[in-house]
Image (cartoon, rainbow, N blue to C red; front, side, top):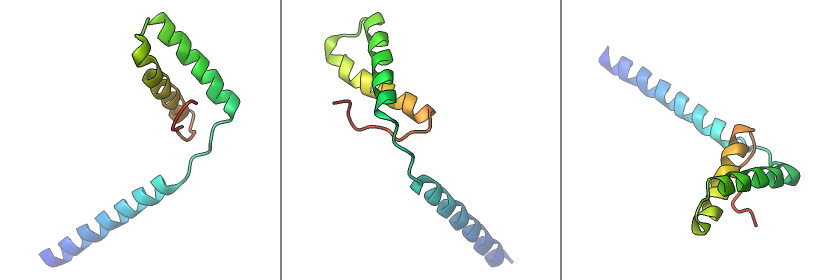
Length: 81
């Protein structure tokens, strides 16, 4: 009986993990460049208002833009250059 239960649990775990993998494999759309530029501008304004040190601005901008892109259902960008 325990062997049957263990097999059942293993099969359920495999199904859940394969579903999660296939869900993650779905590619998100790329954001239009005008949206990325608009988000970058908004994030630059935040950095300015928060008086971030110059050496932290680039990292902040990339994180800020990517956070917004993720919320909007878009693929993250590797750089803002």
